[in-house]
Image 1 (spheres, rainbow, N blue to C red):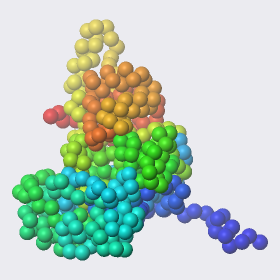
Image 2: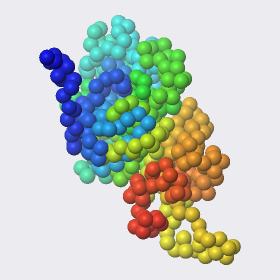
Image 3: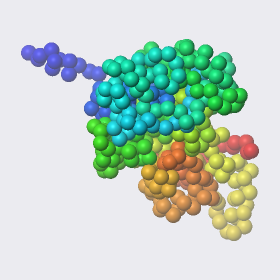
Image 4: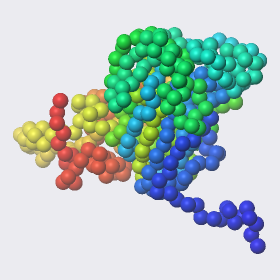
Length: 455
């Protein structure tokens, strides 16, 4: 007779149409940990997300710099496949947030303040903390009571949002301190979030600065094939893991097992499709680090991190082997030269081609290949190589097409970029992306991409 343990192992896994996620990692993405789900191929993930960056950064017990959702397995996703993630909805739930440029506090970390915080009072690594009052010295070690935040602001601001989450305004000191006393409520931190809300620090510079909201996900992707801190799952931040003095040190070769889920690309928003590599069985989709707004490059290092609700739909792409993510942005987010041609533009081009004895012009559609590396130059090289491999063309051809019909866009300084350009539909069909591209940008006749209004 089989043992109870053997019976449990043999029991069929229940595949869900919808998986709801409201729990978070401790900041570490580890392929050996149990995933949620699985969600069926074509199913939906609904996630409650916690702010990234500053809240986790002042919470030493979070070891990854962010607080992302526990990964969800997708039924049937095998190593060497890809998963298309359609971002159906992103809703900001925070009433306010705080952010700004910052610096690490000397003597409060071992090599990396995002990963290996150390209490300056008792030396406890990644100590539990408690909040005492408000302000930049409010995070205290639960062991000895010392001021234990690994980070502080150089210049910071508190921003409140209108009820419709359309605009925000940076607040003066008195108003910022009022919100600080209700920090967890105003940040709308999920019940399972353990981060110290950054609103507690009550930064108040730049008062009166106005901004418009345009929410997106700074972290969305699949689980890497090696355990690593979530914010370091990219070619730029990942460099800090190579030979690091803490327990999550990697070699340069191990860093190649990343999936670049931490992109901070503002086009990863509702309406876009993100296609991610599967490097562990089930893929392991995770998300977080929702930003209320951000300009290209995130040059301050941080932006307005918020809580929110996200709805995703997933689809397995069999045999589409990717090294890193591919994005199909919303049309509004495409560079002007990478937008689909209108029928009138195509008619003009065909007449011109006929004048020179040509049978016609090629059919194209947009694609944005993500590259990451230690610098923007290396990230660009990485993205060019990934695009060339995916579309079976030379790097020189990718360079030419991205120059003539696209752009190199900065996702995050110092080292995440988008290689965006119009690619031949024949190449997109050959690699298996043709149907997704047609769905995203339209191809009612099965051949040409539909018209879009021009700027």
